[in-house]
Amino acid sequence: MAALAGARRGEDYPQDYFDTNVIGTENVARMCEKYGVKKLIAFSSASAKSCQNTYGITKHTMELMLQKIKLPSVIIVRPFNVYGENGRPDQVIYKWKARIEAGLPIEYHGDLKRNYTYVGDIVNGVIALIDSPITGTRTLDFGNKQKYGLETLLDMFKEKYSDMVVVEKTMKDVEVSPETDFACQTDFLEKAKELI
Image (spheres, rainbow, N blue to C red):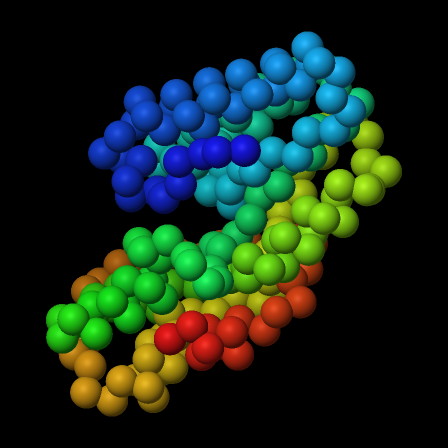
């Protein structure tokens, strides 16, 4: 299912995010009802839990709308901080790597802690859901049981790019809940080293 992702960009284009993440999902869900689809697997976001930005609000609204869809099985997947090959350029790993390779400093906003979820683990989880016996509407959080701070990622970058320049900016430490329904199998630290 297509969606617009990225919390920061959502603040600049709120109508586009609403139209795609809510109305677009509703259109797909209504077609599933009309044509007797037995199972709908829809992607939300960990941001739907906090609703602190336009992106999170549209994902939360989408989840509420899906609660009213009349299908035998509606599964809402909430991935936490997805990373992996061909990731979005606005994600920290790719943003830092691109800036360093362009000879620019990276911005470090304090030791924000996150559950990182490898894209391959999400694919494996969705494949398992396709044949699962889940009925009714269910929301599942996909994430890593362990949180990692940006400082850990910064140390990995310093190891590889010893001459990089870091500009520190202050930001309130943000925690993301570690409770997840699908435990990822990929070790974040090992995979992140491959990607940088």
